[in-house]
Amino acid sequence: MALPGLAVSGELGQLTGRGLDGFYRGGRRLLSRCQVRVAGREPLAVQARMTGADSARFVGTLRVSPAAGPDPDVVVERTRHADGTERITLRNAATRPLRLSVEVALGTDLAELGAIAAGTAGPELPANVHDSGLRWATADAAACVTAEPPPSDALASAGLLRWEVELPPGGTTAVELRVRPEGAGPLRAAGRAATSPLAPARAEGDDPRLTPLLHSAVADIQALLLRDPAHPADTYLAAGVPWRCGMAPAEALAAARMTLPLGTRLAAGTLRTLARTQLPGPGPRAGLIPGPRRDAGPHLPPSCTGTEATLLFPVLLAEARRWGLPDQDTEELLPAAERCLTWLRTTVGDGTYLTDPGPAGPARCETQAHAHRAALLGAELLDACGRPGATELRHWAETLTAAFRTGFWVEDRSGGRPAAALAPDGRPAPHLTAAAVHLLDTGLLGAGRLAPGLLDKVRTEHLARLLGTPAMDAGWGLRGLAAKEAGYNAFGHRAGAVRVQETALAVAGLLAAGYEKEAAGLLRGLIDAAAHFGYRLPEMFAGEQRSAGSAPLAHPAACRPAATAAASVILLLTALAGIRPDAPARTVTLRPVRTAPLGELGLSGLRVAGAPFAVRVSRLGLAMVEEAAEGLQLGA
Image (cartoon, rainbow, N blue to C red; front, side):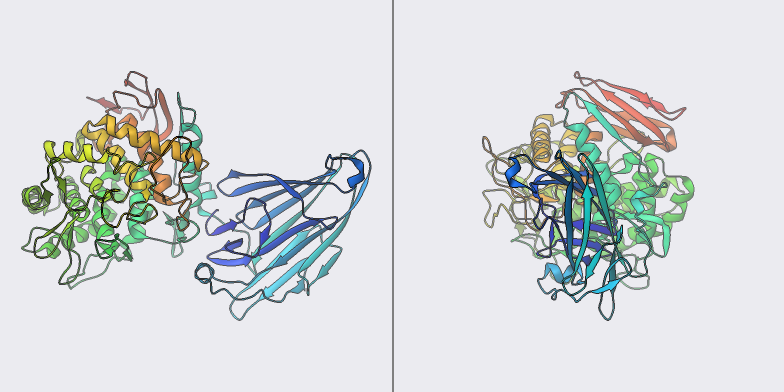
C-alpha cells in the first residue's frame, strides 16, 4: 500500500478476480484480475514476500520441456507496487534458447471497496483495446492498463495481452504493466514525498526482532499517510487497510499521539485537519469533533468516537508541545483545543461524570479516563499560553477523582476492579475489560511528570495484578474482555480479541506505574505475536490462550496494517526507554525500565525538540543519550 494506492493478492501472486484481489486507488478497484501464463501454463509459485510497505515480490518457475529433467527452464519474477505498476521478468535458466508465449489475462468490475466487502460488486466489465493495452468504463469511472513493450496481440473479448519472446541461455526479458484511472497521472502518495512528516527511526539491541519490527511499523505508518485534499500540506493517518482507508478521527489522533517520538508534524497536520471539522456553536454540540459510533462488546451499547476524539484533541496538542511543536502551531491550534475543553465542561454541566449522548447514556470507565486526562493536560496548556479556564478544569478533575474512586470501584474478594461503566441509575457494569487500561494512560505534564490518574496507588496495584492474570493476558497480548466473563468470544472485536493498541497502552501504563513484571509479560507476548505476523501487526487478533507450539490466530475482519497497531510499536519502544521530553523547558527526562525485559536497546532517528535524538538503554536498565538537540538538558 501507498495510500490512496493499494494492491491485494494471495501468496501465489495471481490476481484472480475473487475476493479482494486487485489494484485499488482511492477505494475503487481499477483491476481485479491479472493472471500470467507462460507457454500456456501458470508458473509454480516458490516465493512471495513483502519488499516494503508498498511493494511485493513473487517468484515462480516452470518447465517448458518436461523431458529435459526436473529442473525448471524459466524463472518468472513479478514485482508489484501499490502505485499501480507491475513488472514481469522472465529468465531463461536452461542451456538452450527458448521461444515462449507470454499471456496476461486482465479484467475488472471497477467496484468500490465497500461494495466488494459487502459482496455486492458486479460482474466483470467488457474491455476495449486502448493504446498499448485495455480499457474498461462505466458511467462514472474508467480505468486502463498499458504495457511496455506493447503486446503483439490484444484481444478485448478475452481481456488478453500476448507477447512472443525469444530468450537465449541465461537471457532475460521484462514486461511492465501500468494500471491507472483514465486521465490520471502517476500516483503521488503522501508517504513517499521527500517532505514526509516522520523521522526514520531505527532500533537495535539484544533482541534481533526489534529492528524489523520498528522498520515495518515506520514503513506502514508512512504508507498510511493521506493528505487533506483542500490543504495538501496537512497529512494524517488512515485508520487501516483494506477496510478503513480514510479518516477515523479518534484513531488518527491516537496514532499521531503515539508517533510523537518521530516528530510533531503529523500531529500538527492531524489537528489542523480535524479542527476544520469541529462543530460550530451555539448549541450543546458546539466544539465536538464528529466521529462514527463504535461497537463496545456484548455488555454496552456502541460508543461515540466523537467524544473520544474531542477529548484527545487538547491532549495531543499539549503533549505535542512537550515534544517540540513550534509555538506558532500551538497558538494556531489553541482556539480549537479551547472549544473542545468548553464542550467538555458544558456537557458535564453540574454533574460529575461525562456520560454518553442521550437521555439514558452510560458513564463509561474509559470516557472518564479520557476526560480527566484532557482536563489536567488542557489546564496546563491553558496556563502555559496565558488563557483562562485552568482552575475550573482542575477543580472538576478533583471532583471526578473523588467520585470515581467510590462510584466506579467494584469490591470483591480479590481486591476489587473498576466497573466498565455506570448505568444512569448508578448501577455498575462489573465485567472486566481492556478499556480499564485507559486509567493507566494519564498523560505527560511538564518536567517529565505524568499527570495523576483516577486510581490511587492501591487500586492501581489491583488493576495491574488483574491485567497480568491468564483471564486477561492471552500469552500474545491483552484480551478485550476477561476470559471468565459472560459473552467472552476469542474473536470478538471488544469481547475477547487482543487489540494491539490497548495492549501497548497497558504495557506503557504498567511500566510508568512500576509494575514491570506484568508489563514485561504482555510486551514479550505481543512481540512474539508480531514475529508470527511478519512484523506487521494487525489491529487485533484472536484472544485464544497461548500454548506450546501454538501461533496467534488472525481475525478475518482486522485491518493489517492499522495505524494504531503500527504506532503502538513506537509507544512500546519509547516506553522502555522512558523518554519524557519538555521542549519548552529544554529538558528531557529518561525513566528506563530497570529490569530491561528485552536486554540492551538502542533507539536512533527519533525527534525531540525538533532535532535528532538517540538513546541507548543497557542490560542494567541504565540510559545514555547519544544524540540530542543542542542545549537540551537531561532531567532527573
